[in-house]
Amino acid sequence: MPIESYNPYTGRVLRRFSPFSWAKTERILGQAHRAAATWPTTTFAHRAGVLRRAAALLRERQDELARLMALEMGKPITDGRAEAVKCATCCDYYADHAEEFLSDELIKTDAGRSFISYQPLGVVLAVMPWNFPFWQVVRFAAPALMAGNVGLLKHASNVPQCALALEQIFHDAGLPPACFRTLLIGSDLVEKLIADDRLRAVTLTGSEGAGAAVAAAAGQHIKKTVLELGGSDPFIVLADADVALAAKTAAQSRMINSGQSCIAAKRFIVEKPVLKEFIGHLKTHLLALRPGDPLDPATQYGPLARPDLADELSQQVNDSVAQGAKVELFGGQAKPGTALFRPMILSNIKPGQRAYSEELFGPVALVLEAKNADDAVRLANDSRFGLGAAVWTSDPKKGEAMARQIESGAVFVNGLVKSMSEMPFGGVKKSGYGRELSYLGIREFVNQKSIWIGKEVATVAKTE
Image 1 (spheres, one colour):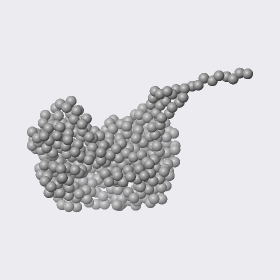
Image 2 (cartoon, one colour):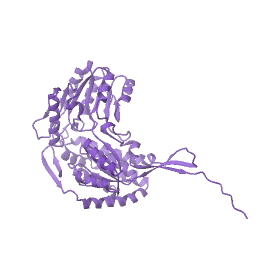
Image 3 (cartoon, helix red, strand yellow):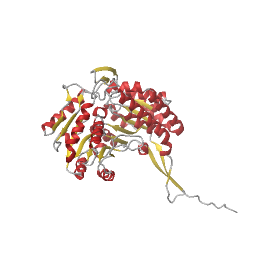
Image 4 (tube, helix red, strand yellow):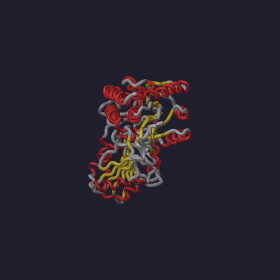
């Protein structure tokens, strides 16, 4: 696949980049490997200074970065600014807390002194997607760099300018250039990088297929991995919930990033007594959203990132309708080969339909009917995914009890599912493994080393 900036709104190619050769890629890997010997010798205070300057630059350049996101993958410019600011907040968070998170942890044993020490692994490769082109990278890079690791970024091929802009920010903030580099390479060189002993770990956010391929290569070469893959997040609405507020939040969640978010709510599991009311509210909110040019501040959702993604989503919808799903809100593509996809609602979602078992990565809301709370949990868990989930009820204790039963990495009761620096982020089942963010995220790519020091032994001077 070529490495090029393609504007999904205009259909025009903005810039093309020549992919790096293996010789150039290997040279950068060598530089990173040498930097991995010196960067950990810096103090936490020094690294924190770099991260805080990076945060300041992210805030200063938010308009420029938002414009790049709008042009390269269709994100509305107001959302792009918010993403840049969120990245800055993450940099500040780890600048403030990394030393605390990685301080020696004393353990009581039979030793004179014993503790767990957290030390960096070295060069970490990040294989990242296009949907949040800065946030996905920063939530890896900020903790990794603060831990003393160095990073190599293989970004999605359609956001090269975003990738290079973030590299520039870290370098302008004072990070030694070899400590973070963007590799303009295709997927074909990822396995060669993983096979190289100078690379110590890999983190990937992307599809199941990409995750499986990276995990297989990393397993063959005994490399630590963190995978954040797809999601088909359930959004449970019980009969006692504030249905109007739940539906308003449901529309917001489904339309995050034009529906292109791993943790966007996708399956709306609603108790039968409030099913029609919920659909009515949801339809109203989705129809009120304004599509348009991502560079226009008034635009609330833009095109999907590429026409082929809209084509695939249309096929999933058409197949599901042929298999028995009912269209509650008509939308979708105006014609094949175009990237704009208007919101849709499908109901009567049943096993055997593509909509029941697959992730629909775009603005299609799937409504499932639940008999009661137990049935809602059953439907929520009847998925190979397990990334995020939401429960809406007027009884917080009931919501908490249900949250404990749902198989996912996160559950939000009466709230919008989101990622944040303070809480761990990741999934179970086919949604991946490992965690990003919080203190757990910074401990993924460190050697959790046990150090045991024996008790002092009294020595008796030898006399003649």
